Length: 307
Image (cartoon, rainbow, N blue to C red; front, top):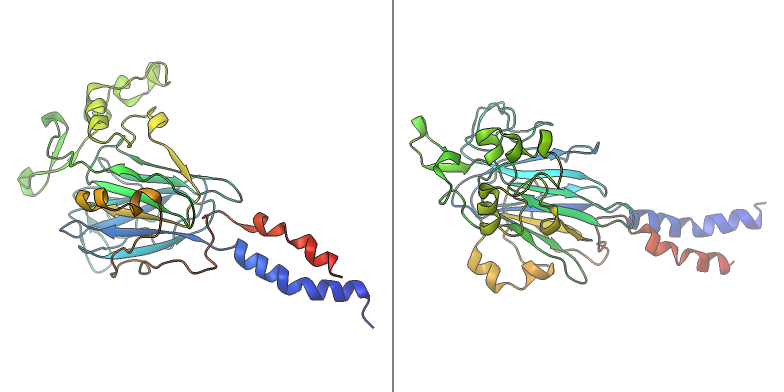
């Protein structure tokens, strides 16, 4: 005959199972293409975290894709433009190329490119995220956290830097460069000088200061990273269940939509792509990409008191 202790363990097993399911929920990135042309988003994992379920895919104009991620994931997401791939996924892109493949598979973006960077919280930790134009710029983007309660800051670069890009930083597309400006280089990439790259004797916050070029970027995109030590006004924290990343955002819609800047759920567009369609959370969706197990452990002693 089983002992009383055995019955206690059997009785609380369903509770422990429920807590485990709640704690192992993943968060997501909802990528939307609001550009009038096709883009090819790419993803790259960092800090020893595994690659996302997709590292590169096609997203036509108006389409939305959702990519699942686990708590603690760290990496970056960007959009490639002007790509041509064959049947086995080999090819090239005008901007943001990652090794000449549809799936980046651990290869980073070739600058100049606009980057969304994030480290998701694990446990009770916050998410840290930013939009960076330190490596140059190819497309406008906004990244908006979505939370069940409270509010978090959206960030991004809404300006079209290609139209105002200084001549010496311009990247022109098309055959012979006749396709217009498709990207804007950073001063570091264009000139390779330590003072622009924050390297050598300029490799600290005390010695590396904003340049006329990074200041031009910062004036156009005040929330985005403009040079290596620009974190004071460009890094944000949150506890979100999803980050909606919109390439070529509609500025008028952003100005009229309270949702993008409070992080409340917003009805985004539906469409195909390399991930699931955007969706609203159900009642079991955690309020953070991080594990919410500790918040439930508070109730665990109550179950033992019942026996």
